[in-house]
View: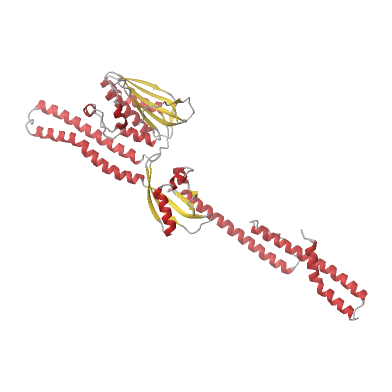
Length: 460
């Protein structure tokens, strides 16, 4: 809206000079007072009209500029009556269109940059000058959730950020995160010029867990294999030398020795298979599974596969399986390996002619709904002091009995690492003289079921 005061000011500027000329002419006698008054009135009306037109045009241009500044890019298409103002209006229209096109391009570029950052497979963080996190991409949110403050408090990373800010040079830091599973990360801390939004430091994280575990697995495999394979290999060499020498023509001895050699060869095969399987599991332990498993189906299939061993040991297997209970996220093949290892342990180390019970049920732990799988036997049980170490590689409560039963000493280590990968929990209970019970709690998916709360037990 055009104010009257602005119109009057513009009218005075426009009509002031003609009015002064008319006054001088009247005083000089060249113009009569009547004619001067008439001319002054006409000049005044013309000045007011021109002033209103000028002020109205300028006000429209100013409003267009304000809207353009706010991002509206608004400019009336009507052409002002003043030719000079029309040229200015045309220039402003062109400027507004150019600004709109550039803003759209900038917006598209920002969206593309955001999509690229979000799609990066490595976690990325943007920090402000005061070390506060400003942005995290999808990989970082998946790895750390909404709380990246704990990561930024890691001494190695905090020191690298301080060095990068002080020296204005990229820095590297190696981080070890022990929970929820062990992870080894390499952080690249890159100081940046001031970014929009206040970003000053870029932190790019690379997961080196797999590579480091592969390196350790190679060393452990060589050490463990050389230690555990030495005994059966020495037996094979000894029997081969005997068969090639004193027992060359002794048919009964040859038959007996070949049977022992076959047993030792099978023992080495199982040992190598378990070592390779354990190495594969440990390499992927930090990556949670993505599928799901119906526990009753997995348990039934493994129980059926172990029928020959049950018959050989004359052990009765009782199944108490809750139908439709789903573990998720879960790897059905690895959970089958858990059931197989626990059942084999119970059958081999429990009482010959005894009973083994395999159960699945809904269970709650720390307020989280889940599924529990348990295997119990009625054997001699496990001394309390041995329980914390049962999941160590090659740890045996009774070495002679374990080897006689055909165990490799790796079954429970495999179970532990599979349970860790599933973000579950392994619980071992063994009251003196009352057998042993191995429980595996897993996060559950599917329909909600009545949950049984886990009581305080000895865990491993």
